[in-house]
Image 1: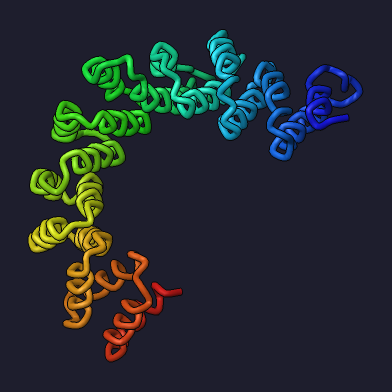
Image 2: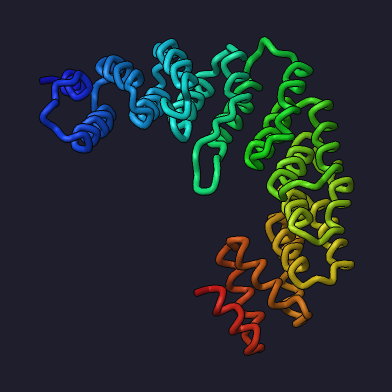
Length: 338
């Protein structure tokens, strides 16, 4: 029996003597064997698994279709996608099927915006302890990013569809929408991210996506504008500092050092020093090593920042030499190096 025919037999109802759990495990194992199968023998078994009533098996099949780049199975993916919107709480609990299928369709750069718009708008409330919870956040986020690939939509139309998800209850969706808007690469996209950042009042992860998106779209010229968000000295300010550091520029180091001069909160000073280290600029490392050399009040925080930046062996040796005369700093470095 060939590998493909063995797989099909696992899904053809010829295993009635097997308990449900064992039959399910056999079907999963059969899917896993397809990685060792020839390319020509994969399509039929995966088409069969994709149509299975068990959404976990169908999801695994969709992931393998994506992994094997079987674009000829796109119609089957679309059929399964439609099926999992029918009585979705029963047919596709936890949205496993729709999530995997949307990932595959996105990877194949499907050019049918209606498919992704459907996923973006889907809310699936399922019973949890004490009430009901929406399980479709990942689906909405995946479809929002995939929609940007649809060339039939203008930037203006894309923004109209995406901006609504800035009000999504799921913070992960809101963050992914910011990243999707960034991918448009337009002035309008940058301005919309600026507006969302100014409005604030959101989770740090969402604001971080806005800050980073603005900097990637506008470059270092946006650093002075982003520095306004450093003054709150809270989690959102920390994300702004890390976004600035992500430009890996001398302008970033200058801005972060200026913020350090007015920051009094010990935690936020640590954040700024870590961001300075993560800028990957030679001047930044020299600045931090000098704090250690002069045994400043930030010496231990500077040690932590340097160690956390995955420094070269040369920098580590310099740091060890600087702390050697000071037992307190030596202990701090030893503790971080364990």
